[in-house]
Amino acid sequence: MIEITSLDKAEKFVRERVKGFDSGHDWWHIMRVRRLARYINETEFSEDPYLVDTAALFHDFADSKFSGGNQEETIELVRQFLKENGMDNFINGVSNTMKYISFSSRGKTGGMRDNLLLVVQDADRLDAIGAIGIARAFNYGGYRNNIIYSPVVDENKNSTINHFYEKLLLLSSMMNTETGKRLAFERHQFLELFLKQFHNEWNSDTFNLF
Image (tube, rainbow, N blue to C red):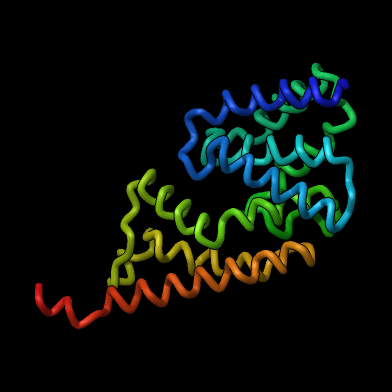
């Protein structure tokens, strides 16, 4: 089938692209998002599974952290790739997902409801919370040489722990689909449990021994 052949080419194209990404945004992150997107789509919408797979594959491709800020150029590169590989009918859906999926782009779709975006966005947000989300947060913090935490407010602004409060703890309430909300519930609870334990240990009286 043309779809399978094209999807194989897309996998190779994306896998080569993300080789330099940190391990929180690597090929395995993409595969987890892909699996979650498939599940949410099957439960919620039944959009074209090949389109969902393709959008999940490319969802981080134009991430500003790795595209050098040239999001439009990167999206155009993907549009050209899709056109050259017989996936013209996927161009608008994949492009829209790439453009609006990020946390920083929330609310910028102009009220447009795009089921594809809702599915892949929920899948991406789910991978940012729970045990894997915690691992990814600290991995990226290390990648950026950010501190883990500081009780000094000004120092803590760029800490990984502060990232939980600025973003990760907000994600469960931002899920688009009922399936996403259901899957996010347990992962969100795990975030809260981790932070409670972290602060308990940080504030432990045993620090008086040092």
